[in-house]
Image (cartoon, rainbow, N blue to C red; front, side, top):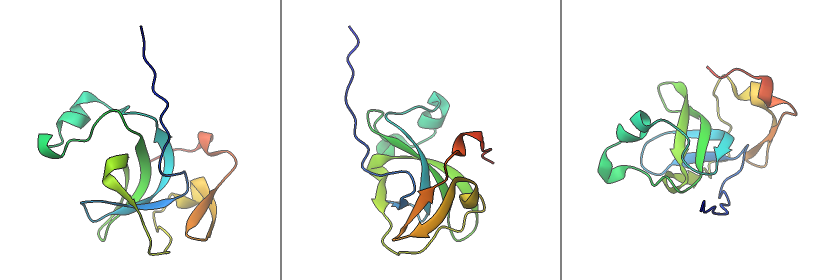
Length: 116
């Protein structure tokens, strides 16, 4: 018997969030209802801070003070970013249009976009 769990994501596409521990923030461009990455990725995280698999994971266009990148982060490690500032990642405009009221409005067709 396969058991399914109804998961509701705490954060939404277009929302700006920050990491609970590490100094980076980003805008969410996709959500997985549960862990959907490789075992190698998960095992590279120290066991004492390794996230649970049974929670939403978020794809972020992320930034820190040094660079821009794509991050994959568990819900337990995210907090809302309350700065009200936009994210400066160079790919934001590929996915999102207007930044208003501290969140981005998603463009109509992001499926055809390439993530670097």
